[in-house]
Image 1: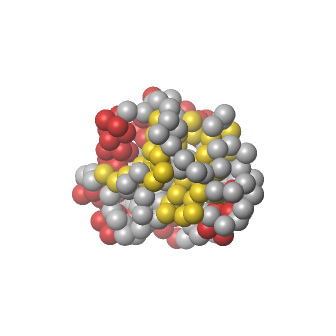
Image 2 (image 1 turned 60 degrees about the vertical axis):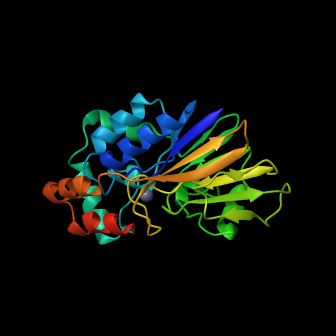
Image 3 (image 1 turned 120 degrees about the vertical axis):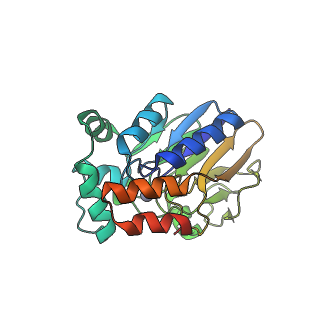
Length: 246
Ligand code: ZN
């Protein structure tokens, strides 16, 4: 089984379309989205429609929660707050109902899906370092877990059950073998707003037959979405950052 994983789409339809095409060309059996479908970008409804059409397994992100009044935006920075307020005014009733229906954690047979960390999912903590990954892995009951939130890709492997010493790869465009892993925690990076100084859209792929995992990158029409962000009246900084991958 090959699982295609999308994360932090942030209403960027150009990036989402490019990633979906890339994953369809790779061939996937199941689709996952790790939260933050909306917030920052100009096309929340279109992105929700596409993710729903794909039949993705989806969990709730902090921006999704904020956009439908489930999370206080007092701790968001000014750009994120402005974008949430814009998003609230641009969601259709079916988008609001859909986002409100999303669970914080989804557990399947082979994998779990959560936006930030399995360690207090409702707090939306970041998994970036192996220390944070170990906290989440301590709560992980399935072979794999997919997260996003930090917008920085990484594959953390636990090679000994219960161990807090992990095998971590941040360079993971080429397939990484997970054949020796007891547990795998994949941060799939961000489709719609990468922050690792690589502006290309990111997507995760886990192959349970070959026991390989990777986070690949695909170029997309950045100028196209930048024009839409500016003409929608969203903060210009949200357009500018996309060409820098920050
Ligand atoms: Zn995000």
